[in-house]
Length: 387
Image: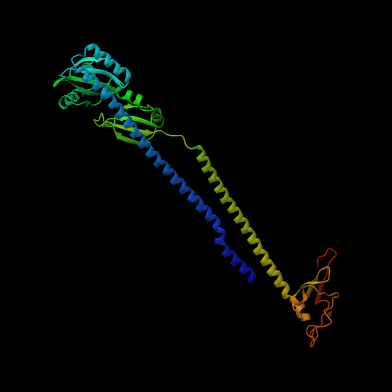
């Protein structure tokens, strides 16, 4: 390989990192885009978690407000029973009104000073068969706490029927300073969640009430969760006794527009990388072709320069456009002086200039005069090419 080909190959080696820069840039763009998507996904998850926590706290406060409202109604009825002028008929009317306007309250039970049921609205068989079917009734403990403290007390949850769970609010009744019994309001957990948890919350989350052992006592939605999902737990106090609210996030539909945008960006990135690879392959083929052409040209020129036959080429106007080094040595002129405008040679003999370049010496060496075989003139052909 000649010096020009070697320098060209060296230049190609220098262009390697430059040609790799677009691919590296595209790879960095894809990497940064992936990092951006990861950060965006993480930010969305954190935002959803914060929203879940705020919504659960809001529901807990709303249920607490509803229970406080139920307490006030039952407290008012208990104070009415503490007065001498309240008749059983008046009690039945007021108790029935409380049950009617408050769907979470299943019934109101009046208890005597020993904690035995005296009257129930609506009337039910409130004997041991109901409360003690799944173990001792927790009403007794709440009754003792209310009688000793003089304040309302919540009972532990117990089974109400076959598919419901309830707890009671026990409010003491006093006539003057004398303890005259208590008033118990039976609240259904399912009814409490059904009527006091808004629809938008149920649309996004599944709300459950669990006991300290993780058993579900009530739920807003009966949709089965096929896989573990994000949830948040807050204490449900009142009623306390280790109850907790568990909100689980439903599987939301994916953002179709964003997914399409991400897919389009990735497709464009892959297309750009493929285009860069195709261009690089095309450039590599051209570079190899140019190297082969340079090598072929250098070989042909070396073969021509090694011959002692003088040769020149003329265009249609008779101007010299090419001379061999052997021709230059024969006439004593350099290629720069022979080739160009104003230099013409109408005849084949080299002695054509009126003033030779070297006047002190003949144009030809004394020992060798130009012959027909040593001086070849390539003139224009009919088509304008040289021969």
